[in-house]
View 1 (cartoon, rainbow, N blue to C red):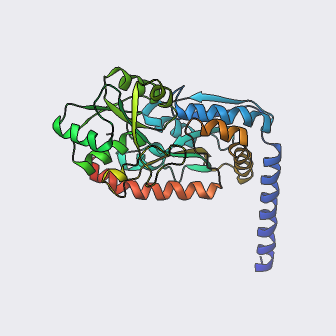
View 2 (cartoon, rainbow, N blue to C red; view 1 turned 60 degrees about the vertical axis):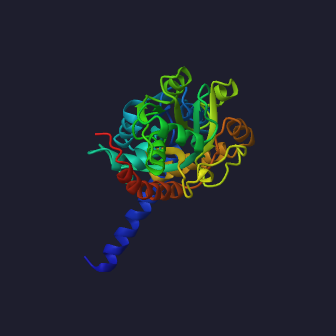
View 3 (cartoon, rainbow, N blue to C red; view 1 turned 120 degrees about the vertical axis):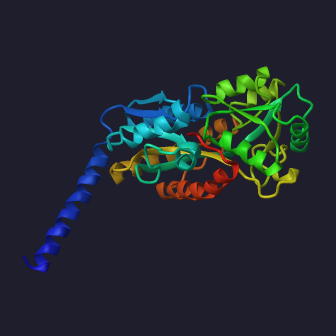
Length: 325
């Protein structure tokens, strides 16, 4: 067969594949979509997923069924979708723990975040907020560090799970400030917040949404955020960098992903629809009020975020000595 004939056959097959992909995207979806949440019911991730799914069902014309699967610090849910059929009918909202920290924390993660999943869109990005039980005589990061140094090993901190941003942010602060505070992991933000209110743990890092009501009720005291500069949605809270730890930054982010081999047309459709949702003024206003900073963008933006955050936190994890198994 001549090179010309080979080239013509290749071009024809490529064109057919493109047309098939376009047709696939146009026919999709023709049945309900499962939206897996890598966190428990009532968590900030669950709130975000339900807000998106409520709007997405109308835009796609099919039910979008939210299913919370918080096991193993979000890695179980993320793995489930990585191994799902690549047809766009199963997607996950996951976060930096399973996507960027996991490969450096687990001896053997059952999936490769950058090979087995296809990023769709970044949904939100916000700082962790450092809170303490309101009964403690602590009103700043400096006072917390001094208090911890005076009580080595006697204080506990809650996290929303092993390998989460909530966990690693405190480990980074401990390593940076040279303090000994005991980690008590929970399965999501609701039980972690409850433990901190009740005094089982004395402090925690989390995004604002699960903390807001308890701060307003006077049960928790917010003392700092983890952005380099003050967070626009919480301008009165100082940064940890301001407390004498320049360069301290730990952002909590999340996004939607599907199985790696999902047709590009479906990924682009999901990206376009969710972009429209996170840019909707009513959605943005409602979620901003709960401390969410909505992001959006392209699948490539999300892929770059996962890669850069994985590279950034790998040496931090080594420095803190954090491990899951």
